[in-house]
Length: 187
Image (cartoon, one colour):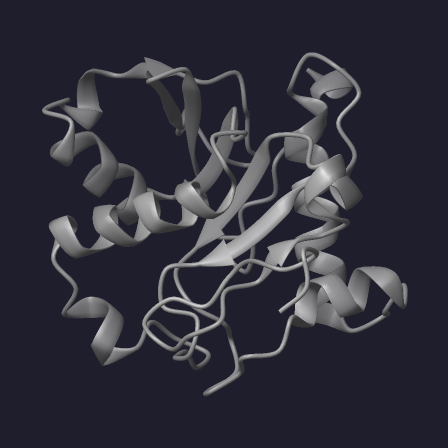
């Protein structure tokens, strides 16, 4: 594999850098698994490069760009990385294989993905169950973490964040979920 992609682990591909390793901006979007079964291609990167109009890509791209707007600095989606905990599984729902993963296994895969980034990750945006697994494995009560400044339309729920070893980890709704984050300049 080229430097533009993450390495293989457990004979599975993960998405990887959306531009190249040298221009990685330190932002990782970490989700559960792809929407398509047995999809090992780098769909998000290819969609970004081709400026796809595919509905799921547009939804993810729009939400990811909104999250980047909450960070101080000028972060671009093209400089970020994207990965899935279970990259070779997935459907339009959470797979049985993923549901059977222990928090320890989720955390181990999270660490594998961080290692692929050579210690350059500064921000992680991830789903609630992965966020909870990361907190649990670091002996942190996720309910006692700080509220993030990310606000969702039509929702009173404030998602949370935690800082671990210099990395800020944000709990977000999955991009396919109906809750849409407000833009930072709309608050």
